Length: 85
Image 1 (cartoon, rainbow, N blue to C red):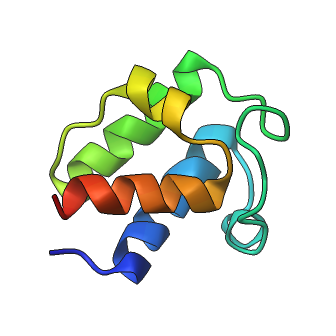
Image 2: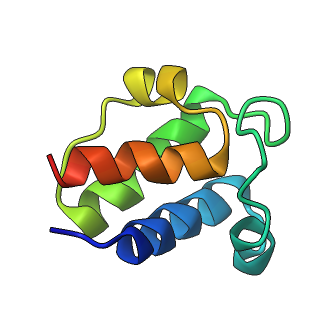
């Protein structure tokens, strides 16, 4: 079982790395939309998935993830649901 904080830290770190953004900027702006604000492309979702799969030991369907997530906060909720299912 992972806590919300553990999932948030791993996810936001993966997002920061994938988009080459400062971690503190990402952490403090969880309302950012990954599609319109960060312009997420498949390469970004693959990078995020690779980090999360290694850190949280689960498999992430990137197509499903991109369709289900809009804001960074919703990404945390989505990942939390998967790893604790």
